[in-house]
Length: 314
Image (cartoon, rainbow, N blue to C red; front, side):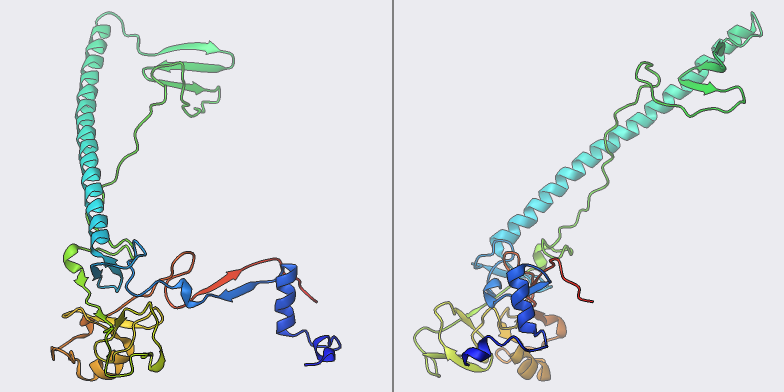
């Protein structure tokens, strides 16, 4: 392209390239960028440790965990649940005891009040439980345990806490603890998860000595590409390299990891395991979730958007 083409400014159209260039240099307008596959974690990495799983286990929802990491997480949940249940039972026992004591105190107060009233009736008919005195334009009525201010028109104002009267001093009550959930849950989805629900995963390693095909090239998603040093596993049926960008399934009975292409073209038509010839169901086909690491989201949609001030042209 010549000099005139590079510096052409006579175009009346504000192109998309110019808009992105100006937005990046001036810092206005919404900006979006699609992250590369480097932001995806490897298929055999644990969702808790983000490291290669030595003993991989998969949940029914398709999340791979290292055996030690997920066992430790579930054990920690059980310990926390036991501690919370113990605290809940202690609080419940304390509340029941307080209810019994309060009921007994109320009953005793009624008996004492009845006795005092009987004694007062024997001498005079006056009411000794209420004392009134004029305070300005209001009548202050002192009752047992309550203070209310009644104006001349008969309206009663609400009772307010008082720090200088023991009967009206606010009490500090502990927060009520709700009954804890006794179910252990998946640390990613939050769904109920037990140890017996975890399924062992059997990755098929790539044969380093050679294969039927050329050892310098491997099939990735149906295309032939150069062998990568990070490639460790392959599909046992199609011999496709399992990478972070390849959708995979786990066969529940055997734990083998196969590609989605193999499932759609080979397994689903017959619903049988091509290696063991075992019958399969839809529940036996577990899709493996591909997650993002760092600030990248999970799944294959890796797009970051930043909202900045924009210029409106009218």
